[in-house]
Image 1 (cartoon, one colour):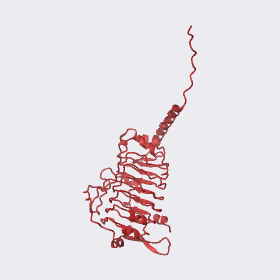
Image 2 (cartoon, one colour; image 1 turned 45 degrees about the horizontal axis):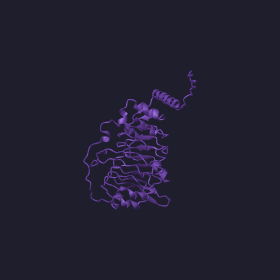
Image 3 (cartoon, helix red, strand yellow; image 1 turned 135 degrees about the vertical axis):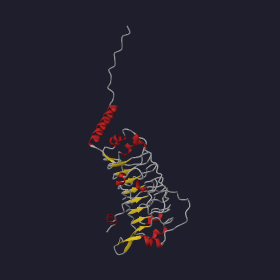
Image 4 (tube, one colour; image 1 turned 45 degrees about the vertical axis):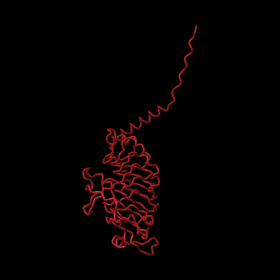
Length: 316
C-alpha cells in the first residue's frame, strides 16, 4: 500500500482541521473561544523523549519495502515541547501532531519523507518553511506567529491552514494560547498546484496579489478576519479557475453596498460567498454588468472616425 493510499484510510478527528462547515457557526464565541494569558518569552528546555514517543506512537503499518512494520502515527500534543530533534530517527512517520507546544523549529520533520499529514498548531513558529516533502497532503500551522508563506512548497499539498487569532480553548487543555499568525500578504505559493483548500483566517492580509494561476486546483479560500479594504483586490482572484467558495467576512471591503455583486462580477464561477450561495437572479445581474463593462471597454479601444477637413475659406 502506498503512502497516498494510506491517507485515504486515515480519518483525522473533526476538530483536527477547520472544516468548511465551521463557517456556519454563530459569530459569538466561535469554537468555544476564550481569552487567556500570554506565555512568557522564555521556556525551560523540554525535548521530545523516547518515553513520550512510546506513549504517542500508534497505527502499525508496513514500511515502504513491505518487509517490516513500523508505527506511523505520532501525537505529542500539550507536552510543553521546545525540541523535536528525536524525530529525525523516526523516518517512517506519516501522521504527526505536535500541536500546543512551544516549538520554534520544525526542521527535524525534513527527515520524514513519508509524511502525509502534519498538525503544528499553537506553537511559537515564525515560519512554516520545510524542505519539499513529496507526499505531504494536509498541513496546519494555525495559531503561531508566522509572518509569510515562504518555504511552503510541497507538490501534493491539498489542504493548508495558516489561520491566526486566539487559539480555541478546549476543556481538556489546561491553558489558552494567545499566539497568532501575522501574515500580511500571500506569496511563493505558485508550486502548490494540487492545493484545494486554503485557510488564512484572522491574519493581517490587505492585498490579494500573491494568488497565481498556477494554483489551478484551489476550490475553497477562507480570508475571514483580514484587512482587505478595496473591492478591486477581488479581481486578483480571477485567475483561480476552480475557486468555488470564498469567505471574506470581517474584512473592511464587506461594508461596501455592492460587495456581494462585485465579487460575482469579478469571479463568475464563484458558487458561494461567505455563508450564502448565489441565486440565479444574482448571476443574471452580474452577467449583465460584466457584459456592459466589456462593451464600454471595447468602445474605448475603437479608433475615432476621421473627420473631413473643411475647405479653407477664401481670403478675398
